[in-house]
Image: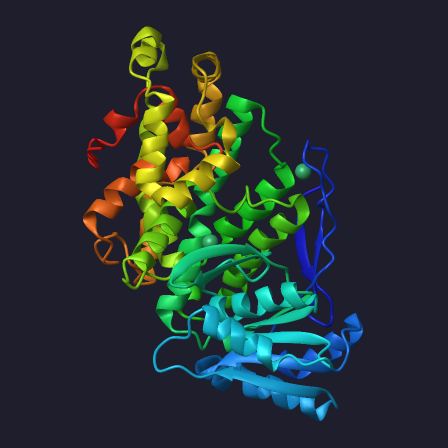
Length: 454
Ligand SMILES: [Zn+2]
Ligand SMILES: [Zn+2]
């Protein structure tokens, strides 16, 4: 049965057709997701239905308070809720840093029963970490379709100037009002589209993991995300025009990506090498005191950068690989450790290696993977052939006036080149980049991104 997304009279999303017998453990979707027009006055009802209580802290920044926060606050007060307003004022953009997290924490009292975040990434993540630490449920009211993190359970934050990720919680209720989303500036919408387009890469990498390493790959999650991304590419004009239908297609794609995380409890369908590279840019730029591009904007650009590698690999002749030669060129464990500390810093590199202990392969394992790729190359080609033409992706991004190159995003040149080499090393998750490396082809493929190490 195909996956189907419908809405009830309250605009609550229902997803059917998610029954699946793949090897992944599946969880039910137990959150309330509402998408529709004119939803803000209905939020008190949504909260009552879920029984979250009546005492809340409302978190917003100056911008999100103006576009939706004030209306949400009024709706709650009119309905008899007790609201402590935590509007975070900043000269420039609000950051998800120690100060913002502290401001939310100190607004919470012993009476607080739930938190309500009105905003996009920063406000939501700042609230999310507080919800996790105080064990209070939270409600997310989205203000921009700019990233796929609304339904996430991880909070990317800034701690003492460094980019960190902390386990947190998913909102109990997500409300996305299409009229509010349409007020988002075009670059934020382009960022959301970039984040979604990266899912094509995530899909291929997941399917490669299944082919090479027998990794369980959930067809339902793949279908759910692929249908949503295809709809987005087909309707990019409506998205650029910010019509209600366009906003619905975009936010659905962003939220359904999060729904797959709820179902299989990992981000396999959502993020792969393109996210690793984008996150690496962000991490290093923050360290260097530079302002990184928006998350989804970086993902869009890194997607364009890695895409040709997939097309090229599909044309490869793996029968020509010389295994003795590949074995002779393997780097030693010591050199890999130096590389990891060089790319990710001593602390970061050590942490990644600790969390991914199997990432330095024995030759036997590497050889097994190469032989598997040779045997099942037709399947690999078919998976890559199912990607849409790159020109369609570029065309979609151009219609939204999205940033197309890392130069436009002011990413330092050496960082771009290093990220193409080290993005694959961020985690064990299997990617085409790992396969290219295992086949001894990485230097050849990255000849345009030379990075002399030692
Ligand atoms: Zn993302
Ligand atoms: Zn499944």
